[in-house]
Amino acid sequence: MTLTRNRPFIYRITMAPETLADFDNHIVRRLSSMQGQYHDQEAYAAMLAREDTLLYEVYEIVRPEVPGEMMTGLSIVHPGRVGDEYFMTKGHFHAVPDTAEIYYCMRGQGYMLMETPDGDWDIQDLLPGNVLYIPPYWAHRSINTGTTDLVTYFAYPAHAGHDYGTIEQYGYRKLVLERDGQPVVVDNPRWLPPDQR
Ligand code: S6P
Ligand code: ZN
Image (cartoon, rainbow, N blue to C red; front, side, top):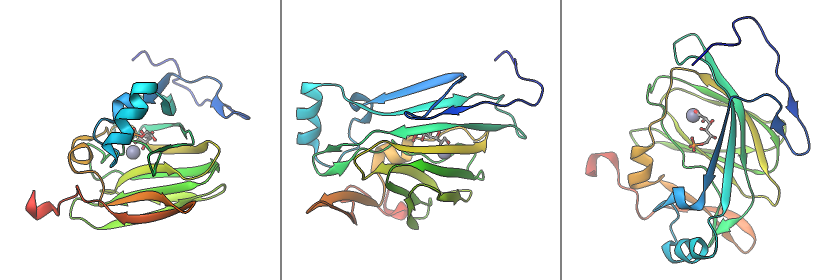
């Protein structure tokens, strides 16, 4: 990329709705990019037949993908469900696995679902004001369980990259589903322990 910002710089997060005033990259993920990720495949197909719904968006301040630089931006997961499963990001490991990430929740209500390559898992609240520290090696997926946008600010090493493959194949160990109006965490039947893959 052409490095236009080679001095200290400020950028602004504009509010209501949140966006970056001066982003370099805007990623838009729709239902069609989540093939095989929602557990209710029939609900997924029926919804996709109606409309390729917008699920989430990412605004990035792009930096050179080298150690020492940071990638930052906003991740916005819209509210909704595919069947009983809440709108969520694809989720990923970092391609350089020993890289951490920080998320700051600005608005909305949801969870970060996380797991390690050896099958350990965790879930933490994404609520306004919460700062989540995701250590190296933990895959992460944001899930919007609320009725408004789930808006998070993120920062991670710019050389980390993304590894989507493992999650695409097996999903996460847990699913977050709606039961009687409340989110519940259940086992994912598609998931396999790493030593059985
Ligand atoms: C990147 C960081 C976020 C996500 C974004 C979308 O390391 O974790 O910018 O990319 O929340 O999620 P995903 O799983 O589609 O990349
Ligand atoms: Zn990440």
